[in-house]
Image (cartoon, rainbow, N blue to C red; front, side, top):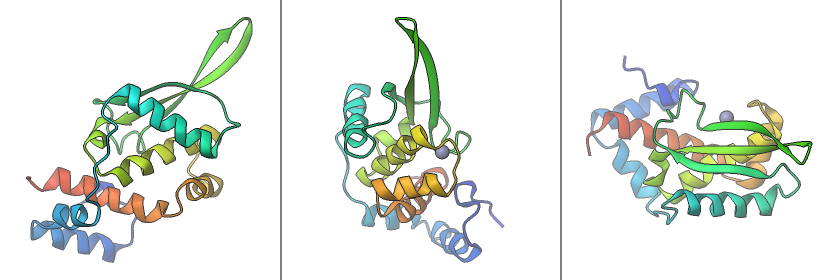
Length: 165
Ligand SMILES: [Zn+2]
């Protein structure tokens, strides 16, 4: 049976349905039909503004953002859907942490909802390091449809990997 790395941990019937759609060559099409809207976040500068806007709306009190960039070398699964590094820098003798956020560059071409989902995920890590209950509550606070979007985003990545376009 084909292992679908992005869907590990989801109930077997859901994985089986994804395998069936893949076998028919229709998984990507099914996802793209539901998420047809592209986004206009083309470069790192625009990505920074996009992340900052979401942060201002939901996490104003948290640590300031450091660098924000699309990273072509980032592997989505290996790095648990992105990376979140806290870098401590010395500001006038006072140690101040700023958050660097790297988004896998596959999301530059992804539907708008999936970019938002991955950015919400990374922003939630500013306050919660682990994927625990508090972490997912933060995600849901920023994006009420978070769990559905994460699942569908994983279907999208599965289709990108297994289905020629
Ligand atoms: Zn994470």
